[in-house]
Image (cartoon, rainbow, N blue to C red; front, side):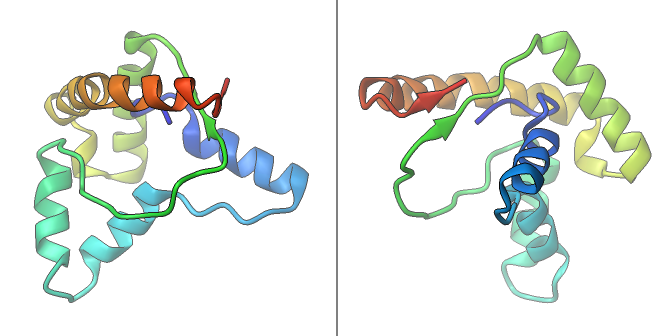
Length: 121
C-alpha cells in the first residue's frame, strides 16, 4: 500500500525479479480494463480520471507492504510519470485527489492490518 508515486510498482517489480514471483500491479490491470471495449471500461476510466478509487473485490492478504514517502515526493513523481507515460490521471488535480482519498481511506485499513500484525515496511 502507498500513495500515488511512492514507488509501489518499482519496488514490487524489483522484489518480483529478486524472489522469482509474478508482479501484477492493480493500477496497470485497471488501466487495461478501462481501455478494453467492455461496459465497465468507461466507468473505470472516468473514476480513475477523477482521482477516485476504483472499487475492487479480492481475498485477504497474508501480509501488507507499506511504501511511504513525503507528499511532495509523491506529487513530483506522479507528475513526471504522467508526462512520460502520457497518463491523463497523473495531472496535479487528480494526484491531489488520490492522495486525499489515500490518506482518508487507507488510515483505517492500515490500522486494521497493524492490529492483525500484517504490516511490513
